[in-house]
Amino acid sequence: MSTLYSPNCSSSLYYSRLATSSSSASGYQSRITGCSLPKRYHKNNFSLQSQKYQRCNFVRMQEGEVDVTASLTGNDTPVTKFKDELLKIKSSEECKDAADFDFKEESTVSITVVGASGDLARKKIFPALFALYYEDCLPKHFTVFGYARSKMTDAELRNMVSMTLTCRIDKRENCSEKMDQFLKRCFYHSGQYDSEENFAVLDKKLKEHEGGRVSNRLYYLSIPPNIFIDAVRCASSSASSTNGWTRVIVEKPFGRDSDSSAALTRGLKQYLEEDQIFRIDHYLGKELVENLSVLRFSNLIFEPLWSRQYIKNVQLIFSEDFGTEGRGGYFDHYGIVRDIMQNHLLQILALFAMETPVSLDAEDIRNEKVKVLRSMKPLQLENMVTGQYKSHAKGGTSYPAYTDDKTVPNGSLTPTFAAAALFIDNARWDGVPFLLKAGKALHTKRAEIRVQFRHVPGNLYNKSFGTDLDQATNELVIRVQPDEAIYLKINNKVPGLGMRLDNSHLNLHYAARYSKEIPDAYERLLLDAIEGERRLFIRSDELDAAWELFTPVLKELEEKKIIPEYYPYGSRGPVGAHYLAARYNVRWGDIA
Image (cartoon, rainbow, N blue to C red):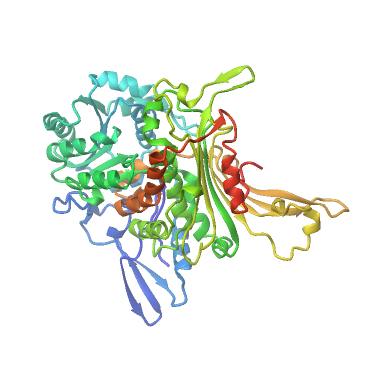
């Protein structure tokens, strides 16, 4: 069986598969073409020069297709086909070759961070771009531009950016030299977000740096959503590429409800095609979230268990051990449900629960995620608990209440905590509660997926566990952050002459197993956007389906002015969350 060359950039590794297929006497012959593969896997026979296909980001080949034939027998199932594709992926030591053959000398990439003076740009976007440069994952010719209303020189931008740049813990050679080289490629242009004239000047500066090469342009909108459309209109009319691709990364929140989200999508699509819009949810770029499909589809022991027959409940938990801390004005407009639950946790749920995709192609995976979301029952108020943290003194330290934040309106009822029970109406998951919990100012910082399995029927060792059979429940835990790990709780005999059982962990601790530092989610997502890989970005129909689940209950919460249950800063959250779980005979796994 032929295998495709697969360089190892620190971004995700995946295959687009099987653009065409034809039957044969021996089974099925599936054909992978160069156009169906992410660009990082292409050899030196591609160019980004096609003006004709600018709007659809189509890749034109100069010397024919990369034709790899894989024989699939008639007995292959979708799961085994999917597993085979995952196992085809091989790594190499460096990703420099990927950058070299992805972008030929006559093309360049211009990355413009719109809102460059903001916290997100300083703390996440610029450091992620430097990390990609440090790993040789960016093309030979690239330029980074900051664009914002603040008056700033190139030198001032470089000084601001330099304060947040760090090198890999496991790879520090030539660090300061690399930083200097990267900063020399960073420039700044001050302008209004709704000014076509200002964007036209930016376009002129970009062309000077592009030097007549094929220009590919990526805009990252690190700005409030109310000015997304103005910025896109100006960039599209005055500063888009004329002979390459133009793509736009849009940060959440994508509206406040179904209507505002739909209006935002319509506004963006006045100036962009759907495949030019990259709606980013950085949690989809987390290493352990991306590993979900690998864990499930390339390990035979998990896929047969992944259903209502063996799984009792699934918990998706997000907690922070700090409050809004000066960001209350922004947070109060959205709340924890919109900020975390409707996007981060729901996206992870869709990835977890989806059926086996036809391939690893972005559209095939996103199709399956949409099916999950459309199969879910709309969230009811009775299946949700909201809370808000109050002031608390502990160990001589006093912690403020949410409403003590000067940027939060007096008497605000905005939830800083929410727990919800969701259900999927399909054959695989019928009756299985998916419990989501998210909160600020809790006792710990974590994000994890907990899969609790059913009790062993007729367990011979029930007497050894006592009356609490939940202590004997197998549980798979995927800790997304911090201290990434995957561990499985199993029952085991304690060594000795007696028969005493113990609940033990089979633990894959990433820091102990892998010496390489885990890339930040923004690194992976930025590289994917540059390469046109959309698997980890949100499609418009996916966004619509997500809002349909939460809009009714959000509207009810606000219209009825539901008072959240108050919980002390630094506690485990409101008691109501435990009652919600108990209603479905579930115990929160992070409490044990």
